[in-house]
Amino acid sequence: MAGTAEPKQYEVPPHVPVDLVRPISFAYSPEFLADPYGLLSNLHENYPAVFYAPQMGASPASWQLIKYADCFRVLREAETFTSKGTTPFPRDPNDWFYFIPVEIEPPEHRKYRNILDPFFSPQGVVQLESQVRKLANDLIDQFIDKHECEFTEEFSRPLPVSVFLGIMGLPQHMRDSFVRWTMNLLHSQDAQVILQATKDIGSYLNGAIAERRATPDGGALSAIANAAPGGVPLTDKEIFGFAFFVFIAGIDTVYATFNNVWNWLAQNPDRRHEIIAEPANIASVVEELHRVFTVTYSGRIVKRDTEIRGVKIKAGDRVCSVLPAANFDPEIFERPHEVDFHRPRKPILAFAGGVHSCLGAHLARLELRICLEEFLRRIPDFQVKAGTILKFLPGGVIGPNCLPLVW
Image (cartoon, rainbow, N blue to C red; front, side, top):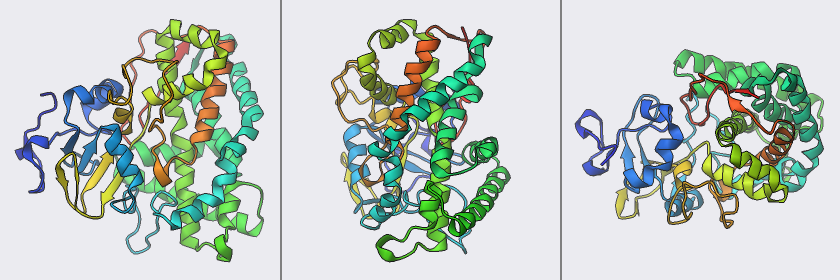
């Protein structure tokens, strides 16, 4: 079977069956970085439904779940699977803080989500449509006549990051610094680089939080800094942990989706033309592309002994819902490897689920829809520049770091 382990090379707890060990990291393994979606989309054919990946470099040892039903259960069963302590970013154990709201469980979780719901709810993000559309066209204006662009630097990063900074009330002129810090935190394999990025982000946010407390504005950071759910102001650590998590989550995920989608579109001209020919079907197109190019995972720690498909999992074990694989589960999605823009609508797990479903899911859908509409309207035919070898960065977000396009 593909991926069969040599267990003696790795530390494996006694309760883990040897035949379920697979030495793979969905963040750092060479075979993953060479062709992540080729590997992820074929897991159901080549791997057990539940398997154990031992610690490999920066990836902690964890049970890996690839079936939709198992991921669905873990995402929603907070009494058995907790998100507390699952975020891997460095923190001082003597000055600990939680990343909020991802590391907070119900019922406390809801009070934090309520603070930002006005900004990221469907009603909130629909008000951004004209702004996003204008920004997309402003960016296209800068490169359309050159007949080429480096898509990451000229479109897929600046658009969602600029929109996010506007929502947060953060300065646009610092966009490149924010991106650099976040990239170093999430994708570097150098501990010193990661630590410095943590300090850079933390130092900046502490200053920005102090400013918003002194002079509140209409941005999301100000809402966090001045929140008082139930009449009780958030503590300094709550505000910092909340602002830190939202900051990094808002900067590093949408670009990866864009890069994956536009790389696929560049190689499938007939599918580009299909999208253009059926403008009324754009919502289904967006959903299907998010299914096929899900960019991240969802980790939990087991609170009490449990079983998944007869596999005994102990309290304290880590469990990873491999969301990109779950969205290729043939038990849920007929012909899962086919990109079908008329696929019957079923809930996808691209944005996780349960109380910890992605806060920015509605915004991500809106941005992808508008950018598909505007880019394909103005540049309907394009290709990846000849000779390009895509490089996927290690880390918890899947996407090529560079995508040169020509037309």
